[in-house]
Length: 78
Image (tube, rainbow, N blue to C red):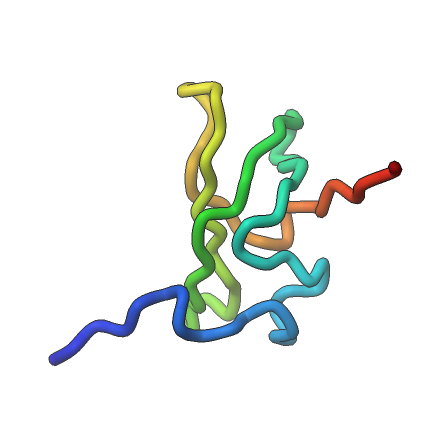
């Protein structure tokens, strides 16, 4: 069975992605503590009815995979 590339499916406007987070966005993750990260991929988890965000961050102790509902986009204020 062929596995789909997670970048091929646009999950930005999906019902489980209330914050409209997309690949490449800078986000603040809040999971009891807050840290900044960049979204590298999104994957739909139909069993648990959520979207998983794969992150790149500079702090090794912070998770690199979280529920997208824990992410808030950082908006440019220029």
